[in-house]
Length: 620
Image (cartoon, rainbow, N blue to C red; front, side, top):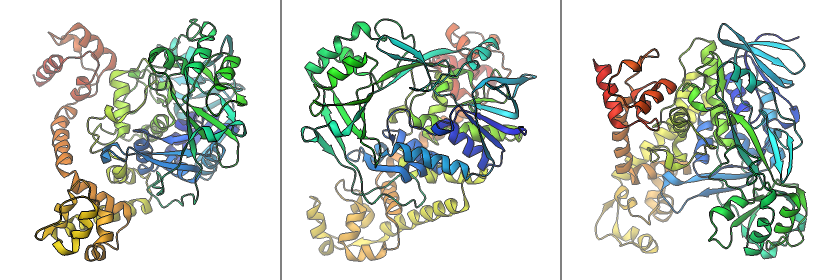
């Protein structure tokens, strides 16, 4: 019934879909197995992509030839570039998506991808031969053989849903949990643990009094996520903001004695940076109110996602508390918020390729590795799909460095430090964030992806055109002299001192209030020189000129750090022979088996002196 596949992907969430697309586009024959063909690429929680640091990840996925950016651009109902008031390293794109359209476009793109087959069934166990994953056994008892397996199980492994005192098995509401894989892998020596996440109630938008809320419109200019020319929506839907209050908090507290979080029924640790509303009330007891975002679920639905009100309290408590929120006095709930607890495998058990150390040809991606968020899952899926293809074709793994991509930061953090709570990406996690901007992901990653065979010729040509255009614009600005009389009105409008003599345009651009688009628009001669360049190429040139000093400093730092990254530690290195290592460092090195001295230096609990001792020993 089944042919042999190169790669089997277990699970069709964001990680599984990106893994399937990447491996198939590289030429592997892929089988994507999901428990429900109707929920491929479902947005299980909020109907949005991107945000702080997450937006950078989506742009990196796009630059690498992944699908998430394209799907988001085709399904968005609102776009905002966050942190525009800060420097470009902090700018982060975010889009509200039409939940149903997002999943439909993902499925359509996968169905149009050669080499991807689909099958609906549960996977109960991994087929193992000679220490290698070589296929799966499904719930219907079928053995399906492959050369590698990528597990992207999301929250489904032994998932348990909690609503107040009610508790039932499930990987998402109304969907059953997956069983068998955890038990098998633990028996084979893998370590597993439990995590928790939660989701807010969904409510009827027709029952909201929007006059009591604050409107939050999208940006006038929709930049989007994909570097390809994807048509953007001609209109946008607004989101809205309201707030909790002391009455809401008092009502919520009445349910704490029935909350699974406080009665000990939930063992797993929840996401620190996306806490439940009951957690917020406890941790920030001095705050009189908390912000709630009213987010539409799509173009043609009245369903609303109440961002900021994640909860697992009893349904009647959720209802009574929501009715005290301004604008929600007559609220109708479509479905209550709930918490979900699930198995994950601490990611220190992985190699940087996302292949498990305990079993060859078995890869993990997404929430099974302890992360939270669609974007974090999708980028892991992309890299696991690439590296599974590389492995079965006897090619070198593709490993992004911390200086190359947020994806590299995320994977290195997981493998070097592990995580005991759901891991979420922030710009502060990246030591080279001036280099890792959302505007230059294509310049950083497209060439690598093209060499692999993932990025298209069209995408590569577009990137080269942008790169060449950026250099030409910089050269023009460094040679072009502005006359005092032609620039006076513009500089006064920008609240900056007019010129008293000729000055190079590049020098004027360094002034904080001056930007290249408005300068080119106001000064005719300069505008004529730059008329043939696209807005994103002009922006790229401006950022590179304005932040040149900071960019060069980071490049110097990368160069210094790369010396440690290039010092490889042999796979069979015997740490017991290294005298003077601290006991903690010895235990961590033996457990994690760092690939380089650079990775060794980032392991939690390892001191610089331990790395120095290791370096001296290796030098000998």
